[in-house]
Image (cartoon, rainbow, N blue to C red; front, side, top):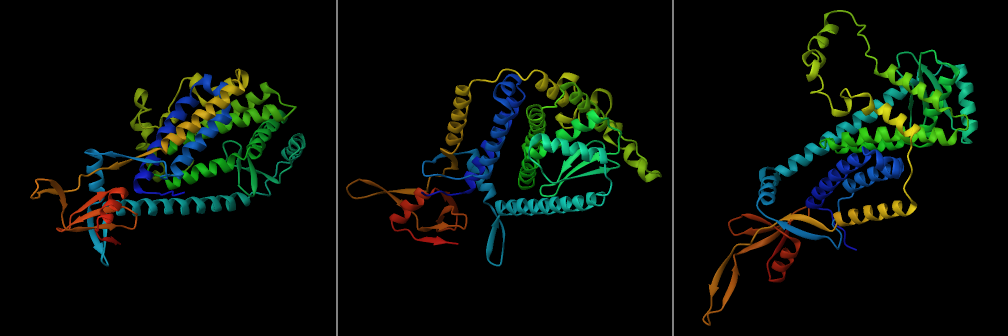
Length: 411
């Protein structure tokens, strides 16, 4: 089975993955679809979107679709030489790939460094204990029947509770006075994140953001994924815990949401601390223009459009799920679409230069100029003329020229 990865298959992977991300976003914002097919289906669609970008390949059944004009001009521009170093020529595409890999490497290193630094920083607060919270956490663990080693800490400047750590699991609580019911709801929710392995899913999404930092749709996917994981966590709390009290749980969600949404005052002193506020976007844009600079998911919304309202609506009115047959049919349809996305690949097309030669019996033959076939390190074939001009050609065309006796040279 011959599976190849080329520049054109990578372009197709990015194209279809971006299309899938937008499609899943539209489906996820449709209440009927979300309540009918459930959050698991949306999560699967998100995973398929990422996999399509991660696995750009040409399979034996993949057919090339030759696209002229604009696609040719774009590829010729990217293949244009920018110079050479140590006898090796570099194109614009090579430079763009270097920039891609370099920035991705910097993002990955910075992200891992920040993760390790934060884990070390939070570890300094391991002696900030909440004894009541530790007792309630034991009840929560007993209720689930799945005991995990989790460190419970109080972090003074935290706005709301957080669960962190892939291996060393930590639940951080703000220095706030929670009632017993509120503390139980908070710990139940954060513990459910660990039960669902949500932090690993967010880890993978962040990894994709570092690798494909130039694609803004990855940020859209992260936002959708974060909200879906919260809804899935709410469902886990409702299904697993027998002591679940919907009213108390929802009231706690409201308090946490308000704590995290309340603007914080700048406690720093001096002119340096006041400069950012003088030239901030909140100062420059106000009134009906204040949403212009914000991402759409951070803009002010009517109450019925907020993330917390959506979670309340899913808890209070989860809706009637579709039948098993409809679920299976939908997954089959998704599989067909994924396979179809691998069935073709766009490639530039060039007519090889020929000149007509007429023989004595008036028959016409195509005489191809003196030259050779060049295969670069990315397995892309070029027709090189006697003047040194390069014309990208398909693999099939290259094999045809080689079969006619033309020389093949590899970089």
